[in-house]
Length: 135
Image (cartoon, rainbow, N blue to C red; front, side, top):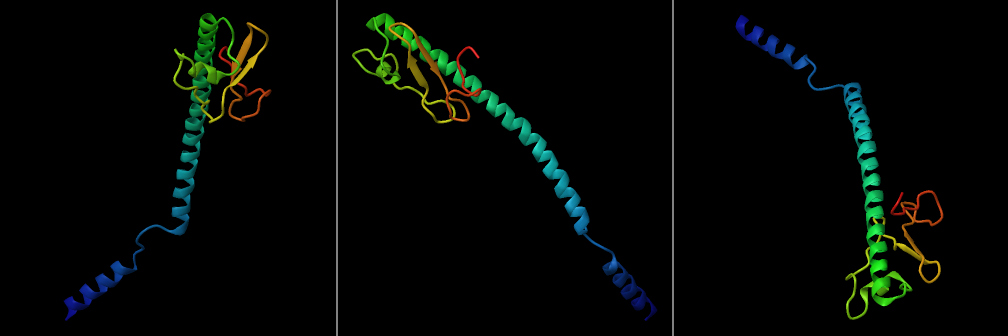
């Protein structure tokens, strides 16, 4: 009988030991994970913004070359970028949108001068966030 009591006593002692984590420990782990995720997110989204700006710069440069090709073949600048997709020999199949889903801005300044740019991440022209090919 003595052995039975010892076995039951040991079992009860094992049940009283704390298992798992306390609420404070869980909160500390969650806080650490959130901090790490915030730092990683900051760098990832920063890289994404820089990649979008670089993509817009390259696309603006390509569109400028297409307009110059149009000028050499037609002897005039197009009225808008969609004219690059028209005619017997279109220069491109479609005019892309900028990485933020907006149309590129095409401004003619006379018979031979033009400008193409993106409004940038804010989507508003005339701000510091406008993206040109040579930025």
